[in-house]
Length: 75
Image 1 (cartoon, rainbow, N blue to C red):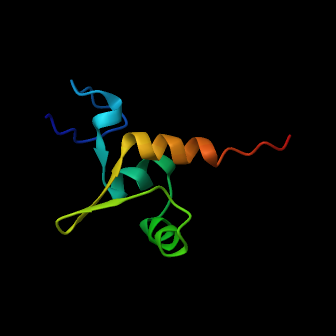
Image 2 (image 1 turned 90 degrees about the horizontal axis):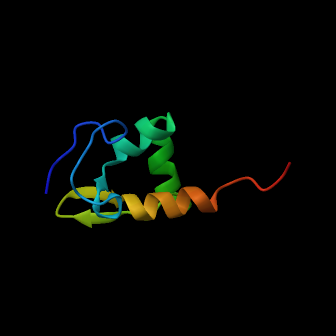
């Protein structure tokens, strides 16, 4: 498994669905403060996250599904 420094621009050999993102990665991709991400966690409105040891990780597939579910259908 390769580890990407910047998931937004890095090229990896693993499928997108198998990539794991950190909260900092999510915040960088969405251009939001980390505090917002952790507020979403408290309110259970953010992407599903997994505790792996003492680290919090979000699968790219879960992040993409969550992002698609938050699309604004209003025009």
